[in-house]
Image 1 (cartoon, rainbow, N blue to C red):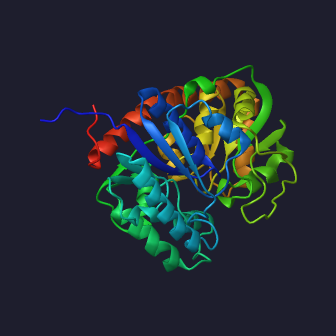
Image 2: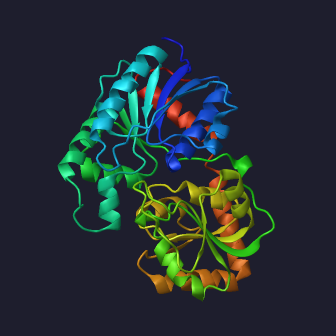
Length: 365
């Protein structure tokens, strides 16, 4: 029997526009530690200066950068096709052992090595959860290429059982699938002296984050409410907050400092397949108030307060109760941190290496 070996080279796609970037860099750090080379092919936008700084110390990372529009953007399909040709050319030159796609459509390309597709979110499940009506887009134009990419993958990975169920509901049975929880480096997030502030983080323009609900009740909260996150959507539309203090995009080091000092972290999400910011806030010792949706219940049941995403009154009551009950706030924060500490980057990378093995690319120890 052939001895198991660790892959020497992985080709991964990512975009620099949200949580996928954070997830990809977390894996990149673990690959670097293990001596695995990573080719990171980015699409959607140029990297920011802060993002370039993040990867500057990763000796085994090779960046392949582009601005091709990605499948969830408006009118992306010509760019998606050109990006596919670009990715196959990278595969030929970079010669990876396995391809790790953080998007769907390119799963249907004629790869020469095994490939996995990771489902972080999707337009149709977003519409199902957020708009609760038929999408205002050509469903088949999106569903058909996404289905083809998922069905062609050697293995489909989702960050929660809830997200995997959503993919199956929208795109059909996925016989080769796995759930791997995301993780964050625990060294980067730790509690500090807590301040009387309420913090939220996420794309303000994305209705899935439901920041409007928090903004609406901010005047009723005794503590100041701060929201970190982009307020301009990819099309250039600006979304403003009326009552909470909008901090705009915040670099990771500053956000970690804010989380370390925030007493309460709030994300009343309507749709959140995982929620890396929640994990970061839990590691930072924040008491959590979250939208009552399946994915967040799956991850945080028993260690957070949950509020219906339509319940403005309930959200205000939950936050005020935590403010007025310091012992309960401390207990919830401690429980959330204990759970978060169990979701390590080492466990995440071990699970992905096993998935690469199961995809047929390499054997891992």
